[in-house]
Image (cartoon, each protein chain N blue to C red):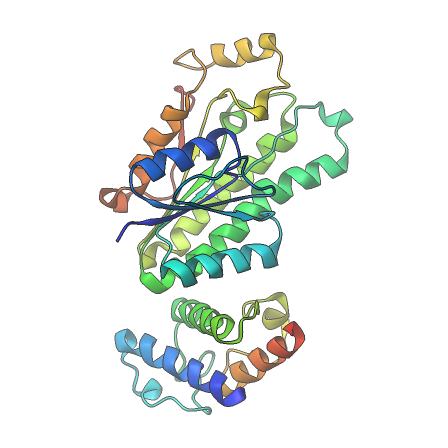
Length: 232
Length: 98
């Protein structure tokens, strides 16, 4: 029986890539985003869910567990960003960012971990960002939300370790997605210059880390945040 | 409905007790103490019990109740004290959920 994986934020970008990537590898992939997918993907199940909607998340997780009898892997990819100076950032923007990035991650972790606890097995991967480690100007709300995700990842990893559930995070460098489309070339060049390996991230860089975290042999790896590009 | 909930809780306690092997949890009934008393389970086992019971109740009654809610945590008399207390709390949540 194939491993069952939930990926959030699958309509585009990294999430969309991960759907194809793990379907190809034979996983049972279930995903969600606020909107429907642009086209049907054979073998993939999509749910229209706002990750910050507690009842919707509960319903989705329950349906997936009912249908497949287990959830082995959760990849909390859904995230939003907003590049702006603190003094020009409306509270509503910060609310939105924290709702999706922090509360959404929390809700999926909580609900999926309940299923994983009953099976005494699970792999959870959250999404961090190098913006936190770099204290990037113009990304205060985004970086702070992901700092919360990092801390949450470390604490949760301890709380569920007895159930053979690992909780880790991957911190990508900028990857060419909608999330960074508003960032100027100058700023992007400056950011990449701070990396040890000076290039944009690729989707494959991320799946390389998720592959590592989800493999059975990684049972001794938990509470870790792995940044890409040589950021520490 | 309450009897079904009590049965769910007792079954979950029995499952958890396969590892704990507490005498007090063998043949669990409505009056069995769960948490906070002399014969209660540890906090990690409580997490597992509440999670397990919550999932089973939501599946059986097609509901979305949370048994580890703010309300549960702030109640003067903990709903986790005994099977009976937890059943009462779950009943209340189910009725509010419908």
